[in-house]
Length: 308
Image (cartoon, rainbow, N blue to C red):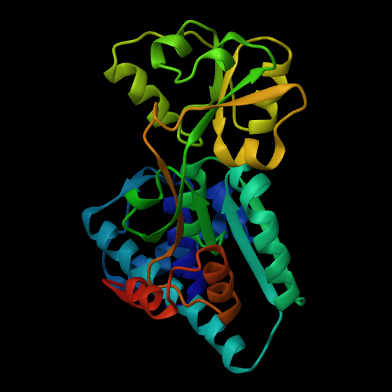
């Protein structure tokens, strides 16, 4: 039994049983991947994968349990490598952060700047995508830390921590009728075409929930992942924007006004997630505590190892 065999099995499950993709990821050949899998199955005495001819089609019942063990073994191998670097006093490395466009644009710059001042030899790699992909990247080890509003607490492979709360804000051009209403209602807002985030991004679920519960129909004419893009189209007169409060706090586009909307939509909670059971280098703990100062390292370590 060797690690290449274990990686072949893990990647086959991750890549939808496409051995060509597995071979590319592992920098080997497709016959080599097939041989590694077959040799492991022969050594264990069980079939890990279901097959249709030579093609893998799924995991057997024993294979599902074996894959879980393989994931743990490979995680501990990575933990061993990280721990050896930590104990050897190495101060260099890479901090891979998977996050959304909004967090990367408005929340992370000051934290990353402070982190780099403390750890100048650590390279920071920002990876931006949807919350679902963020979770996948942290689970797979492609990212050390995931930061998003939606979804991160739904994965049992992750440990996530609430970091801060924020609300949505209405963005309109100067002189818009909504700026003359003391307390805008959902009905007032729904009278105009709306521009806001894509489904699954930046608290969009709370926006939809509010209108649905009030039984008010909306005309969402444009969606985007990025707050700056939303504001750009609001400035062009295409509709009324609903954006994250930190977007207008840090960068309200010229010619736009922000209108209070915290009473209209449920507050949002940004969460930070790491892989359950992972060994975190000291600089990763430092980043987490800079991003969420109310957290304590001891509590993070306890949560990481619970059920690992």
